[in-house]
Image (cartoon, rainbow, N blue to C red; front, side):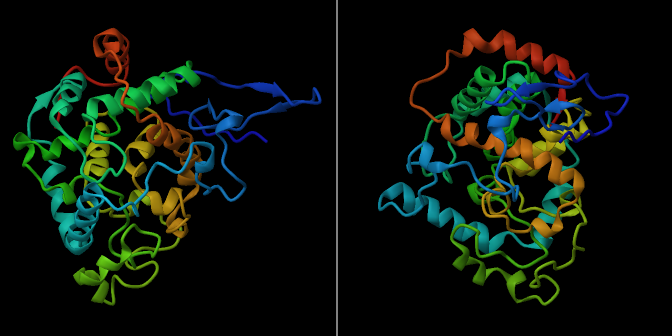
Length: 323
């Protein structure tokens, strides 16, 4: 079955317009085509319901383990306690309005990558490496497996750049307002959220307008109409969109929802999705395993790969970006 999405006139040319492969018995079959003609490779497809997480057993159970008994886990749990108490519908609207102005400065995408050398994500139970290494490890792993999808390489590089919100020049926001899993506000908090018990202290949980399954939203409204908990994901999405990046819609979807684990791991909130979301989430499932399972203590040689990623930045972004 082939699904085609019409390519906007001003969008970048697709890396692959159509592709066929052969099954083990030699029968020719078409792969699914999504997002302006980009091909979703068969090895990246998810299960029939479209929401199954990558098979963690294939990688071991060492990632996203929130039950270990150690000091880092205590830090992680406290972050989620603060996040769940403070991320209200009104708070998110306020932060989107303030940071949507993109008046914090101008710099290139690569300059922003270098800023992340001083950032450590306290919500990550797996590693405490500098963030630029996580970006490059993810990007290089994808580049190896999908060499023709250069937009996906760049998406991996930029997906966490919004964590600069932790830095003084961007407001020194607290960790709970920048990192961690994301979820919709303005509707009931699904039990699949990490450390769900702390939502009991969130004022919205006691507001009848926000405490039903759909809350202020209509079923099938599309995730673009949904207010997500504020953090680096939504901020970088705004940066890419408002600076008119020519990345395809699937890339922007990945940037905005890569931390939305209740959806792409558990299938929660899927009633809010529309057809475009259903198409784009297939790319997010592919991206997700590289975001998680490329984490390593072995560092990427930054200077060796820098020219390649600078060429992609020039292809999809203006030289100077408003932040």
